[in-house]
Image (cartoon, rainbow, N blue to C red):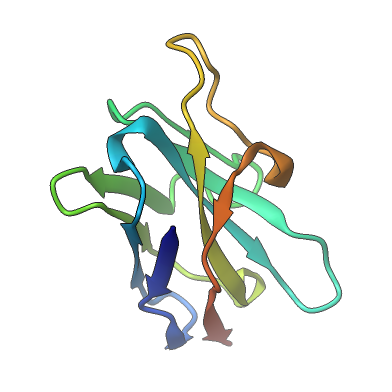
Length: 127
């Protein structure tokens, strides 16, 4: 299984970036796809996740209303559209996959809920 995150870079505050996570080696539609981030000296933080049908959950304290997750099951790819970026959004962003274990499974929000991880892509927001 491989998860390849891309799209990170340097952007000014208020700008936008779109991250992509291309998955291979797994039945993509059978997995929740999530995004986490980790800033220097901080723990990995849940950003958002999406189920196969499109149900999603966001970290409301930090990104709700600014970030949007989506997925294209035909392309085995998940996306994270980030708008109105702030310097505090600076972090390495990781995509992850969590196998859907039941039809009533809640959207997973903790790192231990996830089975596979990508290597991360750095997002730097300058003030």
